[in-house]
Length: 121
Image (cartoon, rainbow, N blue to C red):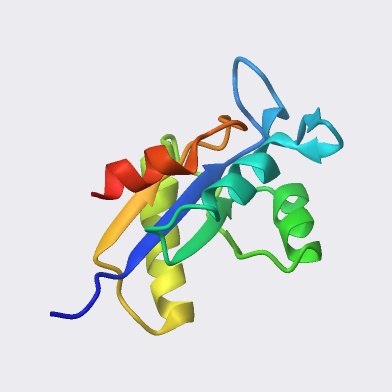
């Protein structure tokens, strides 16, 4: 049996009603969402991690770091909707389909990569 292809998607947007601009808030010199991205890369189970955003500031930040990021529509009401659109974009870019998709919240800068691995298992 071949290994399952596993994708992590971090949906992120600047227009949060309770805390606008939260993804790019500086924590020790790094935007909050970047902490989430870097810690997600430490997962032993996930093959690829992408940020999915509708905001140019987030997109440009990750592009400047040569990190994987996709631009989505700004009409989504839910993170799951943004992740769904991103999945289709990513599969088109990567020319492959993923067996498991893990949606990782962009406002958990101290997320434990082992927790991601447990979710996959």
